[in-house]
Image (cartoon, rainbow over all chains, first blue to last red; front, top):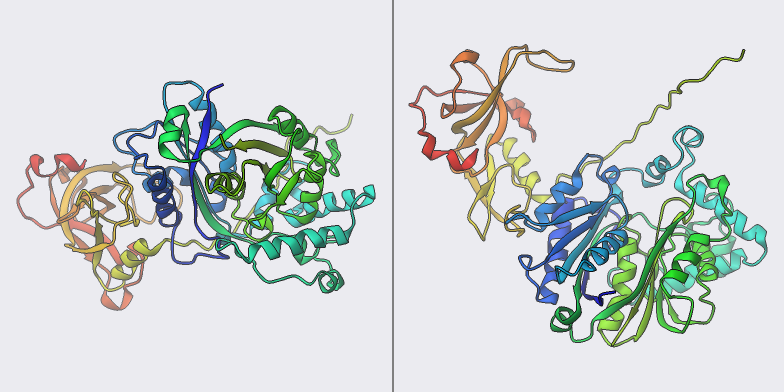
Length: 352
Length: 162
């Protein structure tokens, strides 16, 4: 395997609704910042890959328009995944393994504010047997939360504790959207939105964008004093049908963690992509994190800023940034996609 | 024998509140005043209309507004002979790419007040606006383009803009 590292990361602050700027206008300064920090010009970048969803924009091929933010001239090698940007990063990492290029630009963007994101996500479910019932994203997540609680290992109090910690951490994250402190006892007295989920268990609706520059070997060392080396990366998927798997556990996250080499050793920081509080608990079990991570989602995670299609890439960026800054030596980053943690990506990052 | 199910109908509707962006918003507000506003790239100096806030060649923000003429050149066109559902215009009609004077990228619009067989590349045309009290932040503020009667522009003058 060729050594590939995250050498720079940039993100737009998550906001509830950017009613002025289009996606390209949000993305452009983010891409420019990531490239600028790396010192690698767009002309040198060997491969560009993005993650986004046309469903968010409500128009086909919106990802092609987003290329305006990069300036695709002279013609460039480019790809796109209709997935969270974390999977675009995986494709770029795989592309860098070919050995003929030394750098890649990865970016993701999404404006969840333009439609009803909870209803829109219904369309990722089975079109024949589930979509006609129109279960929204919160209801589907609530099924999973109920399955987890019925397992008896975690409580609604544990879920509230995840929310409270995320809010506390959000206070020091300028890119976070939800920073109001959470009184756990008072929050637990609130009624459920969809039982057993309360407002604090659910992510905010967010608009945002993020970009990461990857570089290989010596080029990474030139671009960054302390590159965040990708020591392992893997992603696994489970059946789409919600009834075909145990929602209270995450086999795909566990499998990805094993193949990414994430099951051994301690982590200074873990950035876990869990849009709902109960999903962090399920993922902590699946990844076997327990006490192995000193700092758990120090950015506040997707519970305080959840730009759909971007939040997974932000996890890798936040984890890598702590290595680049010298605040961490070894980090775990995780991204999820699909309903109820259907697909999971795990990435292990280390300093030299 | 029970009846076989070969398909089901699942009505799907998603509503969006579309945000055009700051640069397209300036263009649309210009139309409401009977003006066409483009933007110039600070790097390559090309003028885009409608502006989308970025130069797709250079990948940098465009910030300088450029007031454009409502006259221009037909760079290319097509004659629509086949009517289709929802069409607001009776076939045959002409859709044309119009390179406004001062712009580097053509606008796509309807061409009227000319026989379809007389339309040609290089033809000089001008916008026909709706009455002032009907102007709105929409391309509908321009009803269509029509020939000005000026001499055709030489191919050399628009060959880079096809």
